[in-house]
Image (cartoon, rainbow, N blue to C red; front, side, top):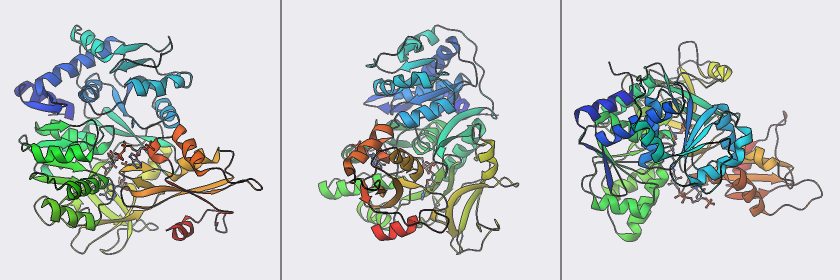
Length: 514
Ligand code: MCA
Ligand code: AMP
């Protein structure tokens, strides 16, 4: 019995080593090539003293090294910690300390961000550098070059045991209402169950070739795009990042591609680029959208311009993929379809926690083998998120159509989704509140034509002081947090509307600012 996605990949590498797997900047790696590097990476880590269960962070852009490190960490029996490359010191220090990361695989920019945090991260013992570093690492933090680690591993014969189904594979950091992110513990069996369900539902086979331009440090690119490719024995063209002009040209020129996955912002930009240049993509068998709501307007515009009905699906870091529109039946715009095979989803009343009838709104709950094992070292948060029957509370609001299609209608928790990246208002508020020109602040999301939602800060300056420059507040955030979390708009007010309990009434601010 296959216990992990890693094992499924190694099986393909054994039976069809010559099959192409990953093309990146015109160079192609076969299954056999990748497996050799993965095993060498795993041995290199073990040779350097990492024990099974140790946490290894990937703070890396898309590249073949990312894929080697991701699978290599797993083959060493260690746990992958995913880190968005946009994260700055506040986010990095929290994640690396919370997960007690032992080793971080990164590039020059990542090391420059990390090295000043050395004192705050006593558990961090080593960096694996995918390129020469510009920042000098302290002597207490050994740096090994990625290629040197592979050489060490290739020369080593250290024994490796494949991870078991119940072992922890990945910590995916995601925030709750508290603003401090928590590590969602995904076991090997969760990843395997979900990739089986997704590939079955989407009729994904070894004949498929995916254009993968989503970042690999988040669930969508990694656990849908890469996992599906590895599981089916298919192949992918990987881009370092999404650039609409390049993606459209690739879709026009490369007739071997069969699938594209993206967030709605990517579809909006492809459409705009196609209209501007007259360039049309070739025919694909499957276009998938997720991570944020796809507007019915964009769905129809893509159908008109590209001749394709996008398949929209719904997922979360904690659960990977939850529901999907049908591959073969009607793909209904504005909905996220039905649970994947072997999984369940329901809508419950937020007070009674009882399932509601079709057409009635409530909170979406999910259950099944794809659902994570809990939050890392946060039993309180884990208990709050599950009921006694094992249903996980997603924090998303929704309702069912009469014939069962699920619609996401809102969020029970405070969350802004900008271009598919999550921004928790509380985290931005905490950073802005430390600026001397801010007495009070509320952060909220307003509609944005490109990113879906944009971050807006409403600021009360200290009494008797002039308001600071809006740009100074934006820079304050940019220096401390990922740049995509900075406010796109700053509004100054004399006071914030509050209810009798003193809670800021964001819905009033939202109505006023629209
Ligand atoms: C970049 N910027 C953004 C965003 N992305 N601002 C707001 N929202 C964003 N999403 C800012 C940068 O900080 C920078 O600001 C400036 O835009 C230009 O940066 P650049 O990298 O050129 O950005 P871009 O080309 O505009 O990027 C747009 C993008 C990217 C390609 C749509 O945001 C992206 O890759 N999104 C995908 C996110 C994703 O994979 N989510 C899945 C999460 P400055 O110049 O001022 O510094 S997984 C998930 O949600 C669940 C599981 C699910 O269901 O999938
Ligand atoms: P993350 O914490 O990055 O895993 O983001 C998960 C959240 O993204 C979900 O809880 C939803 O709020 C949102 N999301 C994912 N897919 C969709 C979708 N198709 N439509 C609307 N929201 C979505």
